[in-house]
Image 1: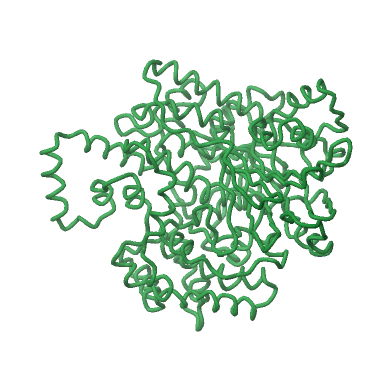
Image 2: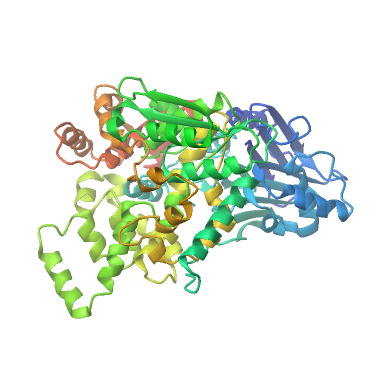
Length: 639
């Protein structure tokens, strides 16, 4: 729900930090995030704006909200699931609250605990609190990074916003590119935080807050992603029972709403389990929403979604589309995404969000389970590496020597097996550009870089981490790909249709519990998500638990690219003056396109990544700047 923005002055004599019309422009750049209401607050030294999607206390929840004396103000994008409990405690302490809205607790909670307020709320959020007495602003992002937050320091002002386009609407931030971020993007297919594609802008990290006062801008961490701490005493049954208890509580908390809500149902285990748990707590049929694609053929999960709907008696809505027949406006997609993302699953979530938004304002989802409980092929590979590492040293050394001399030494699986540490292993698993391709593809500022951007992005996450391959992979990716890839496009696609999506698997107490589950119960005899499947027996039909995993829209990626060959790909990648040519070799990009046409094993995700980057450069930046000419000028200066 909602989108927030603001500008704060760092020290000095308080003055107007931004013109009211510019604050309006920043606020209304996010109308899609909050079509029901808008509000602004300005006084010397600060300006706050918010667009509201009304969910709790629809009539009385206007933002910004303030304390009784009008000194402390707050705006929020998100949901605070424990707000009623906190409200009761505040009222016992003498605070007077006028509405039932969760946001209203924030200025009062700040008055009690200062910046420690963030530790006491349970939910997903981007929050800004202005302390007029102390001339101090605190901006916080939720623990898992479900909700976004961008910021930039410009002279003695700090500007922040839920979306990059809102930040740019301030006119305070330049468009010079960050080539460290671009290089990391080409490796991963997304921009890892705190980087953004723009040199002047950063993302607040999950579990982090920003304090702005007369001393300047400083970042503080109020929560850290839990390191692996396996419980080796509890039995499988005990751990499975505990997992369901935690998930059931997380689902129940996320039913907080004064507007209709439902579930995104893929037909897989995770969303089916959410449906089953949700049905326990509702007196009326759950509304479920599914989207399939004709290109998926036998891999379509629509039939399984219908089966789950019939088992739990849901009010089911579905839609079957063909992205090879429909024209996709990539410029509009990338505008919604804010950053380039080489993930075509965004198209699927855009479609299901549009479907759900026709019927409800809030939808729950099973996203996050794979990242917590090891649901991907790379997690099976990491488990294999763990077995490899347990071989006697002479045997392993002999095997590694043979692999390094073999013709398959460059393949992803071999590089993963031979990786020296968790960072190299994750790059081997997920990286899209190896050294040979880097030399062929990169020009100018990328060719002159040292090629270590991806490693530098991972180093803070892996510092001091034991090299247990599966645990390390899950720990790093829970702070990397989960946040800056999956949650990024999930938030943007849903909010582009003014749909609030809640993710019970990413309740921080569920995440902390999953850190206690041993690796052997996440991948067991090559079976991924072993403990979750065990826990779901008797709750979800066996047919759903035992089916093979299917990635949403992933099997359609090649077909989608084929359909774009004479459209988007030709227009953006093979046009007369592509923007990527400032740092990527045009001939090498044309070679990637030819290789895909000729079915010569090109990395489809890399080709999609270059395509989305070009769309971002050639359409997003000019639109954000309001002038094609100024966008070209700033990018040329950056190069």
